[in-house]
Length: 189
Ligand SMILES: C[S@@+](CC[C@H](N)C(=O)[O-])C[C@H]1O[C@@H](n2cnc3c(N)ncnc32)[C@H](O)[C@@H]1O
Image 1: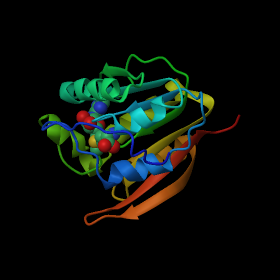
Image 2: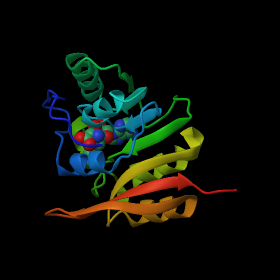
Image 3: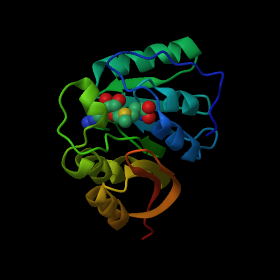
């Protein structure tokens, strides 16, 4: 999806500020009008708001401030977005045609809400591993998921590649890390 300059999001002190990784993921997502969309870990809601212009969209975040901010940003931009405070996609029923996640991908133990935006546990992989493991439950058979990973997230990447047909659809070198966006599709029978 192209960045829409007409979408303006407020930011908050305890919420991840949309950054180059957010824009890399946004740009990688291919979404057709009417497809059912889920963003996990939405932060300000920037990506989910872009999707909500095209069809039904749901967004989750485990950070209470983020969930409230994303809902307020949806109202501010006049788009219908269902925001759920929760752990990854727990409690949600699919199928979703398109799922996106810019996870906490750096090595480190989660602490407060802001840490939770970047700290992905061992190898930075732990949250992504939980996301990938649950993905078959909510992803439509012909659907696709977009997962941003750092090259250091080897365990998450190898799990994703073993469970799905995976291809790299975008890459970017940032100061600290090399990022890839993986497109994941269910394997055929
Ligand atoms: C790197 S930030 C990305 C925010 C936003 N999607 C963006 O691209 O700007 C990661 C987000 O995931 C959320 N998060 C971390 N662990 C989560 C979990 N277990 N369930 C749901 N959200 C989680 C964080 O609160 C944070 O908002």
